[in-house]
Image 1 (cartoon, helix red, strand yellow):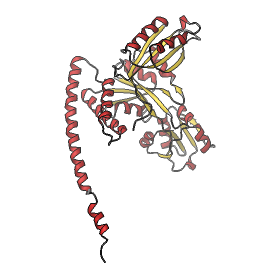
Image 2 (cartoon, helix red, strand yellow; image 1 turned 90 degrees about the horizontal axis):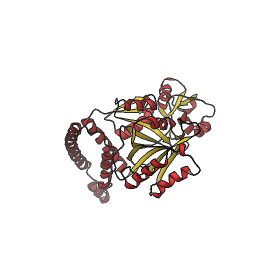
Image 3 (cartoon, one colour; image 1 turned 90 degrees about the vertical axis):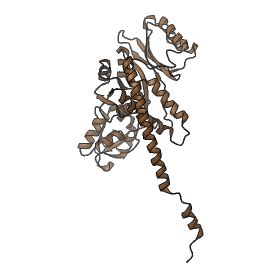
Image 4 (cartoon, helix red, strand yellow; image 1 turned 135 degrees about the vertical axis):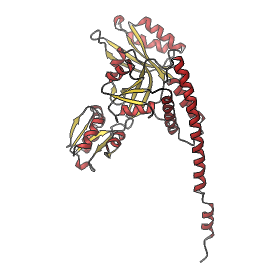
Length: 375
């Protein structure tokens, strides 16, 4: 039987996989060579920083590096993946300069843990703390260089413990991380039918109430201190399921019985990085302030305050009020604006606000990041 000439041609024209693999090996060798060179340069920078008493972690420089690699990319490698790769490269480079410790609201496998890894990579020492106040205290004492805490959620609103700490702490916001929250049903059981109780942190349960009522109406719901504690219980207690992250499932060897069970698909938590000073100017920044207009309270006071920002062409991104602990039934305001205190218009606005308000403090300046990941 004669062979079909078209099939012969197809076989001859099929790409040689070994050829491409050899090309990848060559590229990998070059990447490793360049990473070694980058590490030597990073060590040199670390020595200069140490001799001059400069900070190892420089958020403004990190943002410029990440923005630059995005700009020079031709798009063959996904931009989101490119940033993740360089985040780890930066993390490893910082570890060569200093043994840096970062505190975060724990325990491990929580969403704050995941946010800390996104902000600092896996090469630095991440230290879980029991409360937001503990994170602030560790950084204030100098036992950690930076801290990571949640500040607001797109569904549940502000994290008041964090706002309250910002009003009394000398620490400043020097970075932010937006983390899309994917809540999942995790269990040591293999099927949903075997689940008799669901436990998790109150916020995680609130975000998944609709799904739980619809899919597991007869199951007991129990609040625990964290999603990590819920995952731990699900791993050791028969019939128990947890609401939590994929990270928690992997850490405790749990099955994911249902994915993305949160009510809103756009559920995102914003985390802040805190340190002893705010970040330098990048040209695409945010400034966070807290102001107290209470002693000069009068009709239109808040409107006039916000008009000062508008008159300088400053975009206000967020405003949040909290009770003034010093005077009952008066309030302080947390405001985030676009820009940096070194920008002329922001500097002028802050000077005017300081004259008009009883108290004003800049509690942070940091590179602005997008709530929506760029692919």
